[in-house]
Image 1 (cartoon, rainbow, N blue to C red):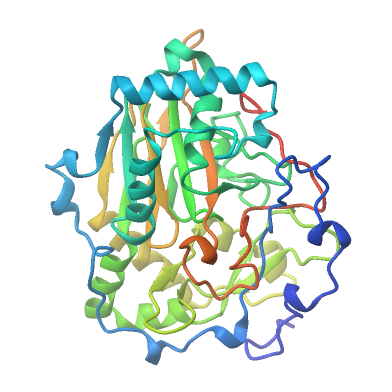
Image 2 (spheres, rainbow, N blue to C red; image 1 turned 45 degrees about the vertical axis):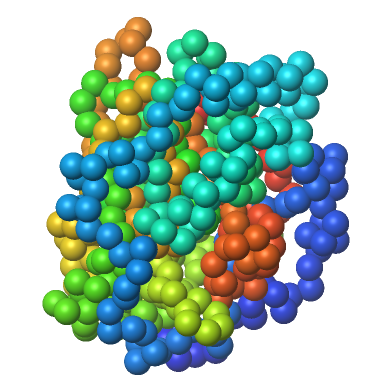
Length: 402
């Protein structure tokens, strides 16, 4: 029989006895000395009831498609010759030094020209509209290796890279590997050509560098969670209430450390800790709908009618309000996962020998002590909070999908 939703929660990870490697990561395994924290349940006593949420949200995090659809200059930045020269020179020096990609940091990738601008970008992504599109990154001229170095070096100015899967990939690759997208309890959708519904990744910021475009499709949609929240508060407050309740189970698809559960019970909307809390979201319908192997056995409750309705209304509202964009080769999109949801259309690749659609992906963490949101999770203050960490799997940065 499924457990009651009011039953005692499992012991939070912050109250479990940590392994030595959690406290003192070995630099032989983690070159920068910092281990990805991984996926955890929230601190249930810090979750707030629907009655504590605002009726409407105001401020720079609330934006509408109409604000930007005809004003790309407000959300794009074309790299200047001077900026590219600095990236190129610093990448060449990094490559010559022989440091592994997993050891890259602001300390060994200095960008004195770009750094002040990247600080403003970081603030805008974290506390403003939540996204930016860089254009003109010379991936075809530099090739995958140098491009990866320059891209990861750029990313270190926005956050700390975290592992994106159970294999420790800190440089990910969004590419169709021919896996079956209907096997959602086993397959990560980014490794297929299927549509990705509106979702947030397990990091504070996600970066996508376009290496090659598809023949058709594979286009990007972004939506302000706070605009969606406002619309739903007016149109369907019952849906918002359902989304604030910790009744949602998220699949971990086997990417778990020893002794951890295969799913996490949580809510979709949260409030930050402390005074004047902002609304934060964590959502991916694929990870909610892939749990029938547990609900069919009565291990967890199946989705209720109210939850199914909430998921349907949330997706439809996001689609209605989204800003659509196409990533060209050499474009880099950075998007917050706190207050923006992103999606991708289904796509068809070119026939060989034309390269398949390929995006290099970064997941970046921004801890509280460095301006990150104050999240109701025990690892909110850790440098590499979030991500996916399985036991002591070492970080790797492959130059192509594997």
